[in-house]
Image 1 (cartoon, protein in one colour):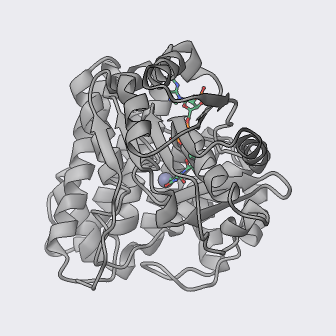
Image 2 (tube, rainbow, N blue to C red):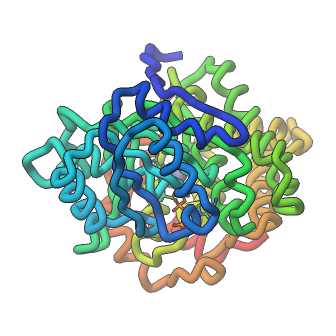
Length: 390
Ligand code: NZQ
Ligand code: ZN
């Protein structure tokens, strides 16, 4: 295991009806004027925004609001939010929604105190300050409720890029699993896929002797395999929703990834798909992640065989571990298909002729990850993904 620091300062407020405490928590963390930031309307329709506003009113905290965050959030909404916060002297941002609303809120939070263009933080610069951010989560997926990351797309050039800083870790995150019951089955499955991908990006490591984090990763993965079919069959199953919601946080606040090298190539490869086709991030991962696995499997066959036996219950073939590894990848892809995810380009709506452009924009070659990838490797992964089947 490698040396590490683990910093996860967010207060998680979990359970039924907890959104009604939002105002009290804003007060606890010193917010004097709030921006409520949300998406395309699901949180308005469900009455959640009204409940959040009521709790702020009850706590005597004034607020302004900015809705309309696009899934795969874009820079133009961030500029709008920065301007509004400055004009209204906002000092605290509450994102209500999923990764998109939260990431947009984090970008605004970094942009408000910064004199330059907030995009600098998505081009490698570290922020020196940020407004405090909190979340009321409505979809278990991105893990942004517990992470120091934000992903934004710059409309000019459709560049999807990430920024990371402890300054944008939420002060508090309200996680009421009941809020996720209104999710369409497709979005639920996209979320499950993203959660599994966050774990796999950490699981496939070159660091040895990491039993504790291996086992934590496997616990999250097994939970997804058990609970996802339950919520697809019964969207109002609170207990299954609760397990998935907490798993989404555990998968990405890095408790499963400390002390070990991580990969993240599948995420980078997927981000080109969601930038180009505006598909759901989880759906893009369903197409890419098993294809990446097939391509890099021989880098460490035993690690893939371990995943196959411990997560998908495949029988270990001691004479030919590669067969076990392959069976695990096949089981993963079949699982994704069974919960309604696309598994190839045609099902996602992606085109083979766009592969060179995606590889050009991704510009691989830095040589990082479980198995360092060059442009030719990424091209081959897209090619595998294009024609994948179960
Ligand atoms: O916009 P509304 O109307 O709210 O609809 C959303 C959206 O269409 C809908 N939805 C959310 N909660 C709902 C609901 N519909 C009904 N009932 C509910 N309770 O679901 C759709 C997807 O929402 P979105 O916020 O886009 O989903 P997600 O949480 O998957 O976030 C995706 C974004 O997060 C980024 C992705 O790249 C993508 O841009 N990521 C952020 C990360 C981070 N900050 O740490 C890490 C991830 O790897 C990921 O890259
Ligand atoms: Zn993700």
